[in-house]
Amino acid sequence: MNKFIFLDIDGVLNSLQIYHDDPKHAPNCHGLMGIENCKVKLLSQIVQATDAEIILVSSWKRCFVSYMRHRETKEVGSYDACGKYLYNKLSAEHLHIKGTTLNYEVNSGTRGQGIQAFLKAHPSDAWVVLDDEIFDDYETYDIISHLVKTNDYTGLTEENVQEAIKKLNE
Image (cartoon, rainbow, N blue to C red; front, side, top):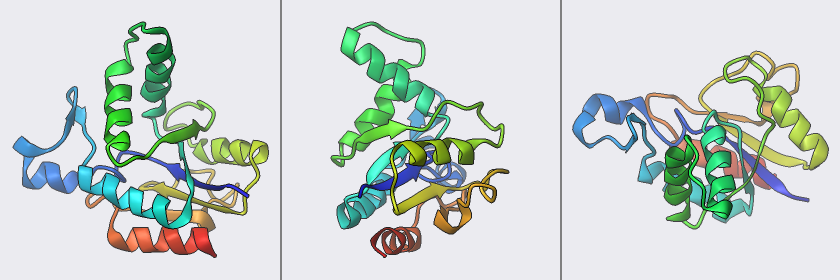
């Protein structure tokens, strides 16, 4: 059976700490908080140790989906720059997003519903959610036991990596 990593971006692949400590050198995605290479390397460790597929649950999926759609047609969409940025950051570590959850409203508290719908269509016993937030419906859909909660100040850490690998390989 497939293994899945449901990936949030902000607070996972980036951190507030770097913006606080070194704002001049903090990664930047067209004025938005960028992605830290060291966090992508940590994500790569999880994928290499588990063969899990990355499923995007982040609000970044709007950009990513737009970029992927327009990449095929050579058109330019309004969200493509950040989608291309995400694609390139992950590709540098040979990581690829295999899918996204449904596009529920951002910050509406339905992220768990999107994860549940994805799992219904793609059953799996081994999956984790890498997220710095606990959404209102995470308890309803039994997401909490699969959650590897990051801290938005530090982002993904080595401890989070070990926890995710353990959950995925049990």
